[in-house]
Image (cartoon, rainbow over the protein chains, first blue to last red):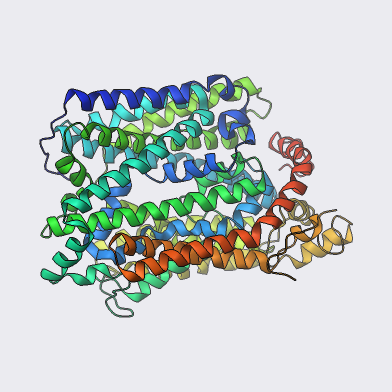
Length: 538
Length: 100
């Protein structure tokens, strides 16, 4: 990890009381649902598909509020000013997804995105795609667990000067207790409690920090005094476009806006889609699924705005930090250096809530892919429900151990997240839309786009610039370059291979009712009498 | 077709209509405006309060335009869900017609 200077935080007995009380409540809240979690595979991974919208909505928010999130947002706002708020704006994909891809995915009833590939596509290509996505997602969830745990390690080093491994391992292990015992029931119920706690703590610390910096008018006037008023303007860009990776162009803003909004039409084009897919299927109706995704995204953006102003407050207090490792800890410093004694414990408990809500989701989600899509579908299709729950628990444990190994090797949080959240999705962004809206887009095309993107994203972003073959490009250009390069692979593959089986497509179409270019499939479904004249399901 | 249509048949609700498009557009506007509006409001900027108020209006419009349709299609799909789930489990266990 980058070394962040430790500070001397004094925990009074009252602070420790807060920490112990809240950790106990979080674990109890999860463990209490032990009996529900062990009933079936559907209960262990989807809470029996019966949740009202506000439970998965809270989970959407809680999951995407991780210990690394304030570091990332702090990193972008401190560096770019208020225009940095467009980096985390990708959460806005839920605005369109709620009424498009969420509806289609909920109607497919797939337990995971990998299973959806098997319902949308047919034949060997679909099986390969399901296996690929299941394996990839099992690894990615371990990877997310690792970077979130790495962030917790960094915080504990900063606070207590503990060796990094203690923060990486200790709190994640606490979370594993209720995920192992109660599965998704434990995750969702603890997420509700943790979501409420984290929102209150984020608001409390941010308002406190803003107040310490002189209040809203104090921040505005101080920025003026030091010649940094541009930081208040979310639309202050360095020209329309350019090639300097250290500038923020209008082209960056437009790219982020297009990616984050229209991306909601697709499935699987954001790393966030995969946990959201689980929440969508755990909602009791299509309507509950739509509202859970919409509301979760909306609250996430509210959180971003509160944080952004708090980081401006931090900037006016500490305007000369030039190391990312220093300024990405800004929000934590606001709390630990300025809250009164007795409140530090509440803040730390809030951080633990933030940490556990993300960890629990990715432990259960990674285990879902390993269990439902790898074990149940490929290894033991006849497994009993009891056996599947046991395997789910074993996979949870394996993910936990794997994440510890990865988490101890990670470096800068901000750089990792911009790569993982944005650039690594660039090449599959368009294919992920096409698979939803175009009947002719087949499994081979989607599979090839994934493989091409994995190779090209590493080459374009890391390897070729390091070798001096390519200059380091700005983010917006990286995104569109990768989108174009990958299309050179999947478009020929699509047209050179057969469409998916028509019978299979009709079955999917009648159930999921996707939008877009499905004319031949619609006509076939209608010819077979599976649709009414007006297009409804008969 | 009324933009705030309150009565839907299951057949109508299953089709993609202007209401879905409007819910998406209003939703994106609400998200965009709350992002800049809330930050601006906390900083006591007049434009912040205007954006925040507009965000509330677009949020209301989103649900006004889509909720009746969502209710109807949800209810209609809910009646078929058990059958679809049985099919899906057969497929996962490699028992379906095109299971692999």
